[in-house]
Amino acid sequence: MYRYEPNDDLFFRRSASSSIHKGDFIFEMSSELRIKLESVLQLTSGDLNSLIYPERVLLKLYHDDIKSRCDLFFKATKRSSLAKEIHTKMLEIDSEATECRSGRIYYWLDLDADGDTRPHAPKDAKFFKLFCKALQISDEEALNHWNIIRNARSLSQDLGRELSARYAEILFQPESAHIYRNISETVVKQLQQESLCCIYRVEDIIPPLKERSDVSQCFRGNK
Image (cartoon, rainbow, N blue to C red; front, top):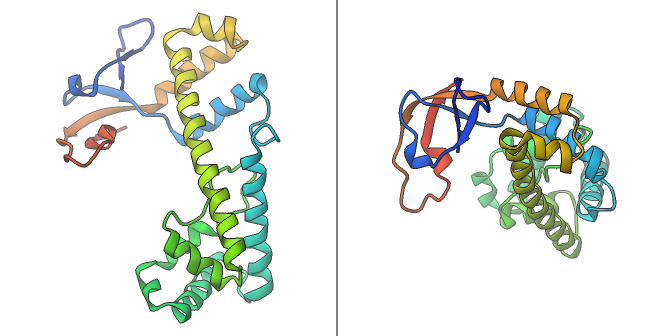
């Protein structure tokens, strides 16, 4: 984890999660800052939505297919109403769709934001199949879409780890980011300054469950 050290020239120090105590300040990257960082890195690594990553192109085709089928087979134009219509259709196909809230379908239909590379699709194969059947997508097409979504999620995880490594470099080794990543000193300083808006004070520490591997979820704090 990144501990905030206000009296340190670098602001942040890498720390083991076990060394974090109540009252400490830690860094948690916001979605807004992650988007800005990814935009900066695209200037030197190429457009992440280009054919360098075909998974992103295929994911967009999946999104376009979902939107066109919604327009073709359902009357609702408002996303909340459309989600309820699709959920009703899923229930007609399989009563177990009651386990899937229409609010989840509402998120799956959030496909209009430019530059959004999240899959916006079910993580559960059972619900994905029902979702596809409700949209009259064949089993073969559904399988192809499912593979696209899994590959896109895997890519996002890989890029997320790469992004974290790059950001750590900017935090801890700004000279390296400037020299080897061709990121200007001005941009580096701006990102460092914006990182100060992602600081949280630890108010409580909850011991992780044995099956929980993500220790970062065990901290509760306020910004």
